[in-house]
Length: 359
Image (spheres, rainbow, N blue to C red):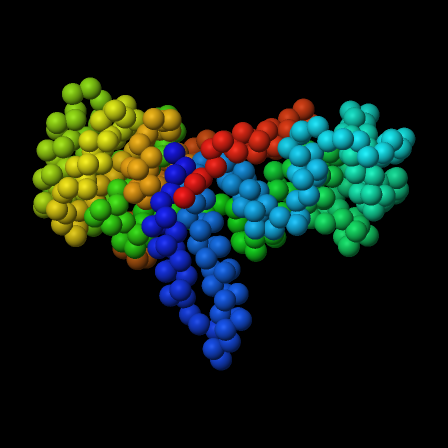
């Protein structure tokens, strides 16, 4: 489901070009600003299309490809949990390392003896508080000796409960972004500023999630109930959907096709219909779908995607007299990685090689 067209990135590039020029017309400053702006726009756009569980994976891969010098091959493989040849015989376990982490220490020290020495892991007084959880900040003494990715290796080995938050901080620091998560979701901004008649809005949902209720409420408030239509896709609904699609495109109405993953074999026909239709400027098509490995890639490329959507919670804004919508998750916050789940995030990174977002 993570497929993006070249036109998407060209649009984001044009959007970056429209940002304000630095005062004085400094070309170097202008290029630096464009690079930072484009990175921010691309990361936010793609991140919004991903499920929460995939955003760290995307962030780590993006950081690695933009800053490859931070990721030596051996250290990257070690982070992913792959075998790394021993470079030295590991020293005895320091007293601050717990017994259950003795294997992690031996593997780290054998693979990267210079890291072990540079980080002064033999100094129990330096590491005991951090290892015990009394503080989440690494010893300041090692700041200039261990780079940010090497610090991630230490967190993975000795504080796996902090791995996810450490990865978030690493990604934000490396890419110079504020957050791995996209900006707060606004249905109003999505419809008014980003959606187009010839670009369906695809909500990639989880089982049981249905944003159509909030869409219908927003449509009723902004353009009237008589301009909003929806079809729950399933057996025998294709002809009805096509008829409504043609009518809505002609009249400038909104159409929601729900659960299109239940009619995935019909989606190429929908795609052809969309390309052939003459569309009113006010026409909008919304699709909801759970992930499906047979979803047509071309339809994915031409869609504006919103992922990780559990529910949309309408909020009445009394002061402004209008309806606002924000993204909320009904799913519980994922538990921190425990020691016996150290490689969960790393394993996800390994698997992602075969399903990275592609242009």
